[in-house]
Amino acid sequence: MKARDEYLLHMKSHPFYEMFLAEVKKARPPIPEYDHDADNTDKWKSLSAQRRGYDLCCIIFGIKLE
Image (cartoon, rainbow, N blue to C red; front, top):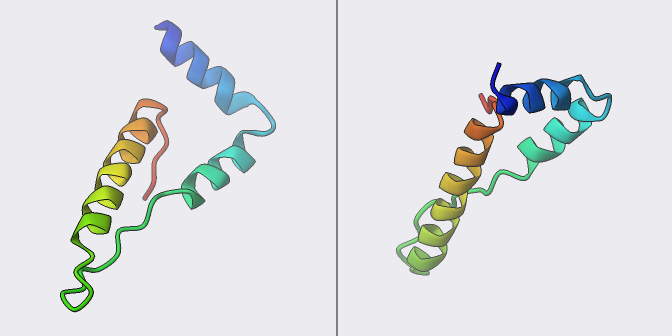
């Protein structure tokens, strides 16, 4: 077993893990709908990049979002 897998197994066996998981899932950055009237393009791009990074971290930690 890889060290990473052992670490993740250790994390998942901790009593706090379920609360941690719920907090992580709530913190997923929202991506607002594009608003052509207010031109929120920069905010939309920034939050989209944050979400991609967040999703990558969840993949690395084995957290299923859906």
